[in-house]
Every structure is written in C-alpha cells, then in structure tokens.
Length: 292
Image (cartoon, rainbow, N blue to C red):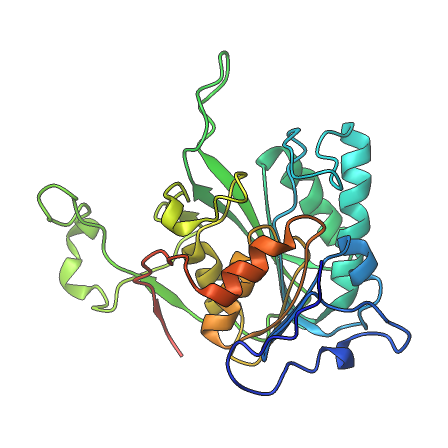
C-alpha cells in the first residue's frame, strides 16, 4: 500500500519513533498528528516497540470463527494454535504496557476464560469482566441464546487513570418514564447519572452503513464502546495501542478525543485510511458523563 504522510489535525506529526527500538525500519501507511498506522502483522510491530510505553492497550482480535478477513489472515485454526497465537501477542502487549497501564481484551467468553488467566500469568491484575450485551447472532439449539461479548479489563498494578463514568437513568422508549425506582431512593440519585456497571446494555450494534465502510463486511465495533473505554482509562496525550485495527474505530476515537495512538492491521488498511481522512462515517451517540 502506498505510504501516506497525513497531518489530520493540521499540526506537527506524531513522533512515533521514540516508542520503537532503534533498528525499527518499517514505514507507516498513515501518519497523523496523533498517531501512526502500519500495514503489518501485529507481532512484527509489537516486538519492535520499547518496554512500558503504552498507557492503554485495547485488543479485539479475530475470534477464530472462520471469517474471511483476507488472504493474509487465518481465522480457522485449531484451538491450540489459536491460543498459542493469542499468548504470543498478549505477552508482547503486557511487556509494552506501562506500570499503571490498562489492558482491555474483547473476545468471546469461550476464549476470554483462558486468555484472562494468561494476562494474570504475565503480571497483570484483574479488575473487571465486562459483559457487553449485543444480540448479533441466532439462537443455538441446545444452548442458551448467546447475547453478550466479554470485555476483560486488567491493569499493571494500580491504574494510573481511572475516571468515573455516569450513564443516564434508563427510560422506557415508549412512554419516556424511568424504568427503575432505585428502591424508593430516587430523590437521592446523582443528577449526573448512575455509576457505570460491569454490564453494558447500551452499546449499539454496528449495522447501519452510515457507521461502517461497505469495503469491510465483517463485524465492526461501536464508537461508543471505544470512547467509553478510552475516556475511562486515559487522558488526552496518553498513548493507546490497538494491535488489531479492523475498521479503525479505536484510532478514529483517539483522533477525536486527543489521544496518541499506534495502530496495525494486516488486511484492508485502505479502509482505515479512508475512515481517518474523509470523515464520512458517523459516530454513535454517547451520553456518558465523565468525571474529571
């Protein structure tokens, strides 16, 4: 892919070289004032990043469901092969995470049960198993209807940044009245909203084409999910690393919220470049209140 040297915010380009080992020579396919994108396998890039530089890592790897991401990807491996591959990039991500940094891993519960233990084996501390309620599949005979994805939240020691998030009190979409009475203590509720829980029922699925590129037909994450994660765990100017660029949602949210970022994607980087340069895709509405 042709290299692009883009200044998306009309400012000085992000000096990403300081975060890489001296002999790193891979040229980016996109370079903005806040971040940099490489069209490379994630391990090639992660192995060349210096120790303890990332404030936040967000990883949304392929789920090993046999989806066709392109000729460079293999999303149908044996369980042992898939887990071995995951252990490899998790080890690198834990190495490059700062003390006090946060690690978020989005995957199926089937895999995150095992991968969560691997995060602990690499020295991280468990904080939350977040259930993201998104009904995107059909019922499976003989099993409960799978309606949530797992978002693991770990940190390397006590988090340097943890910002409290409040969400609006839920109301009925038909009558507009509040759904819960909060045990008769409604008058004592914080007017800014309720404390965010570890069950997220308000993350919309990305189905409408105004939110995603028609060039990438596989699942894409809501900007609301990434904005919540980034606002909760980082401050403007912090470094966010996402080893699986996908459609570029993480990087787009970083650009909007003023975070530095390092991204990589082995397939379809043109989709990410287009997203970050033509600004044609919409963002999901987010009514979170973030306490400073």
